[in-house]
Length: 120
Length: 106
Image 1 (cartoon, rainbow over the protein chains, first blue to last red):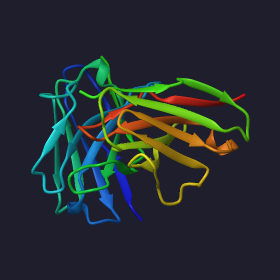
Image 2 (tube, rainbow over the protein chains, first blue to last red):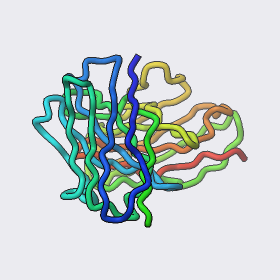
Image 3 (cartoon, rainbow over the protein chains, first blue to last red):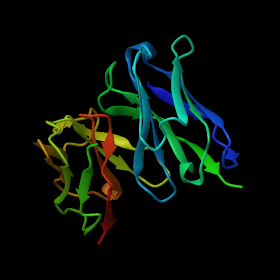
């Protein structure tokens, strides 16, 4: 059974940093691209970032480019998202999602999310 | 960037109704489109991928169609468990979600 478990969400001040983690199990992690998707309170879904299975390619939404960094440790079956220079508009539930293929495609499994609140 | 426009934003329907949700892409995405269902406080759930392929375990009352720029999600007979918000997702060029369609009880 595929399981994705996010952690690391917290209350952080504007301009601060945070690292989110997503522990994966139930599938061969290295064979699949992974992604982060966020959802601000009461709003829709927004794709944030993605990384290919071998970390050879990374992708970012314009809204986070230059501030967020995605990475993965295939030996630990863990996905990361480093959030820097946080703004109030980054407040959201952050979901980890497994892509259907090595290089991307749709998101077939999702974690339950971790809440990031940016506020002073 | 590819923009995705869903309609309607909100839909009120009775149990048993046939329901249709539309999604339009700002440029052709072939059939690189998925549909998700989300309930309050829960993660999204994949229903349809590559425009018309039913994800394993999803009831057959859900179906998807379309290609290019126009896509449709149809629920053939709305059930109580189907009241939720639905999102389309394009994955032709990066990833973009539609703004969502909330299906409410009439």
